Image 1 (cartoon, rainbow, N blue to C red):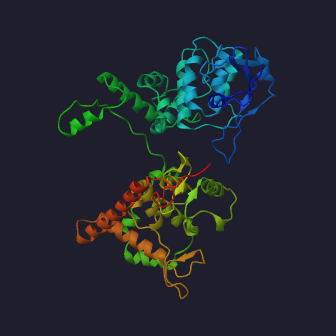
Image 2 (tube, helix red, strand yellow):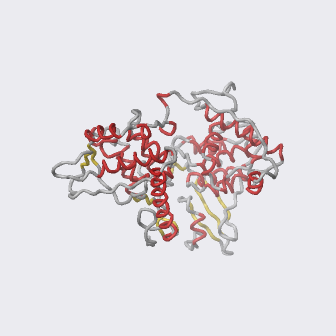
Image 3 (cartoon, rainbow, N blue to C red):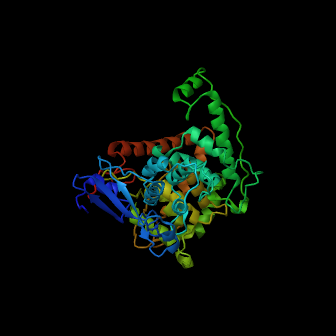
Length: 487
């Protein structure tokens, strides 16, 4: 019979299975009945990490390949685990967990779908549905790790995987530091998969049309070389910290050495901002700065902080394809001051909650994301400052904050020279201070350089003091008051 008694653990177990029924018998033994319709995760622009599922009941081909129109999953006595009785049911449960972005559960289920035999039509269509166009693409680092683990247990099966192992491995290695500990591949697993990957641009399987790039191929080749060197030396995943400390003192065991290759850099016209930098901020003269200030006018509206809703609203505004030129995000329309306040953390970003408290600010990461919306091709002073902050995020906490010292703050227009209505020029004060401090910090030893470094150290000490006092939670520029949020 159908039971409505559900504990918290049972509700969590069925979270990614919205079309399920919880059944129970007279002995209180529970099972979960799930209809076998294809679950689709539509792409929602305002909710990029949505887990909402829609059942496609009109897919006649899918229904024709099913042996049974439903799956039955016995519930473990602990009420936290579902048993799978067939390979098809295991694949369908893995599909639901994957679309629900429950990557830890996917890794736990991977061993239940391992096979070295050909799959049935029902089993193969479930596997292929993991990368179906009806589902929103999943580029999460853990998602790449899950796809690689699924590939590993199906390497010996005569089937065509719904993804390219070489591309998945390149994505996995490119964001390896962001993969959760539960989803990481062991060095042995990586080596097994790398044997099937494209590790040379001369490989016949290499195709730019398929998405293979010199960077991805180089990542796979260098990772394979490093893992082979570690295996030959008898070391595990990481070289121990104690060995590194001993090396610095002149002793200890030497780490394994290997040769790596660097991919060719893309053409200048296609180079992204992360590869671009020019030393204009270090080469600009005071006379050149004053000449630029005479023509500089910037519109900027200061935000005290960005929360998740504000961050999403700003991204949606910047992604508009037909925005008027006056409203486009550019340096003259306030892009410089917006990003500068984010890089210096004077405008903090609070994207979510951790244990009921506001999470630490991620303003520098958010500013790096917004930097791609600006045109930074011309080597100007403003673009040089932003690129320097993006290449070295820790520099933001050492530079002076933007302070609005105007007498009247009713207008959002900032000019580089004083006017009869507004004698104060905070924009000019900021640019003069930033350029002078960066010139002095990059110069040879002198009293002026020492004074600038001391000022930077005082700002850094203030930042660390606030973070230590308030634990990095709540409001304020670098932490602020510890404030619990009721949700």
